Image (tube, rainbow, N blue to C red; front, side, top):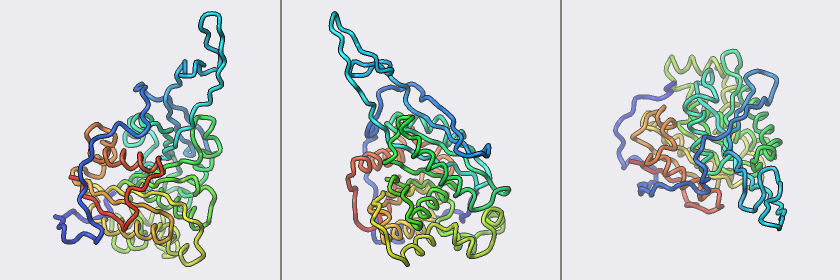
Length: 347
């Protein structure tokens, strides 16, 4: 799905006032990388009655013996005649809540972009990785996708401790249509003052398909408009109800809640570079609404819409370096640059 015009050459003179060039960072091993490089374990759970309402949970394999001298079952380690029992509670891991793309009508939680390969990258960084399926259009129209993600998030928060996840540290990740849904989920929780919003620490959007759905629909070509109409219809009010930017505007017209203080990263491929202005606008709106206290828009010119996510996690990959740095600082509650929106060039 394109929902964009063909890219053209970008001049630095056209960038927003907050522009800076991204200085290449050394590739970091991850802010809390696990030493175990073996494939992660995978379990599948249902969060609703429909067969599409399922999610996969990936985690690092449990070590048989911990550093404390107790094994995973909690039995005592014995040295000579001395037996010691040291109570050890595993540290809960932050959670990646991953939403696949596919024009709202396709894709799957086990696709190459969001399945085992991506899970291995995040698990090695020290995360619990959760990949979500949701009901698809055209059989299921908006707001069913949003409802599914709300239910899935509630399920993950409720059961996170059972699989070693920290329900207070959730990072939403979405690509393409999944990027739109991740932004929509966050702004919907914000608009309705939902307590689940407090769990979200970061919003990571990779080539989000639409941040202002009404304008996207109006400017779409015939093909893309047909795709959008199959999911959201053409009623302006319905389009606005699925627009992350519009939900922010509606919430700002009422009393604002306390700042959630989440961090926002939007990465755009060469295919999506013409959407940079809308990305910066969304970032600015999040900051004005006190939804985010830090944000960054990154242009990854060497990648297209698919390879942007498929190459994520590979050694030496530029977006991997940027994301590792972002996650490291967000998890440590550090401010990377709490200033005006930044537009970074990754070359």
